[in-house]
Length: 449
Image (tube, rainbow, N blue to C red):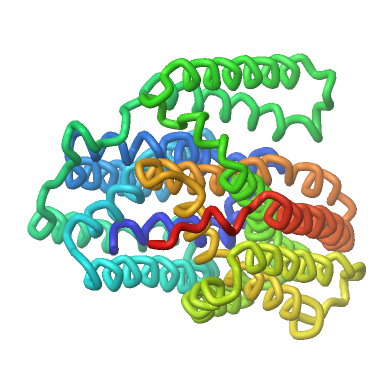
């Protein structure tokens, strides 16, 4: 729990540290986006293969390797002398997190049985939520009183503690040859190349334009790598990291579309809102972190209750209502149009509405993924859905340049850009509700779910 929570901590801290990092490195909007996406890119592309490597070579071994890479990369972030070295360290952090996250959950699932397993997994999820909630406030306090580099440095002691406990207490485990997931290194390499080149094109598109040679070349390479990925995955069939036949289920396809759109909207918000609070409304990093606190708190309190509610009503209904509430929350943000904003009346209502909507989605979404496919594909389907949610955040952050580049006119421009981006978020969330209502079939829910 301690090791896997570090990925949540770093992701939360970075959102309130971006303005300070941008100022120190004197970088533009593209640099800001790369600080976020250098971490999300390997995490999105490698999270599936990270779990497969653990199944093949030992979950403890891959967990400890991921923890070592993550810790060393975090030290690199704290000491980075320039933006280029910071991005290299952030990329390495993402690689470490891609090994940490799937294997930590697999270790816990292997170590418990029956009701104890459910409690252990619930505790693991709660630890991540608590860490994600506390990180922006603690990180913001450190940034305001020391430096953004110390926000990375404070992660190192718990990482070292996790290493000591892990070496002493985790037993090695792996899947049998018949049950383990396929090891698809070719697919992982093509996915990383495709995402990297497409993200480069999207980040540079707002400033350079669609006719720029580098943008065109990167976009073309991304399309080519994507096509090669799907060709390889189709040929590998059962040995693929993403077996395409799984999308033959209309429910799973609908869930995937919902996840992509909903988490794209949410990923953009989690980066842009604290940036707008600090740069546009002159919040301190601590205040910006505290302003975000209602979101994870509401999610943590309501998610378990909402999960039970979904089983009593209907998963499709819940996954329709939840995104509609998220759309309403973005709609409230979209109404902001001036620099004289009040947190309690202008920001908090939208944040609470989005949090309640997401709480309605999280647990039912996990259940819906498991119900939409055959038993033998449950693990793969869950991993694919997790990867899609991370890719959504990656793409959303890449597209934020259209907002950040257009804010040269001052605080009012940034707030106006945030409002415009919120309209896009509202449309994405509403479209995800439509996908849930039209494509998810309740009869796909198995009796033993």
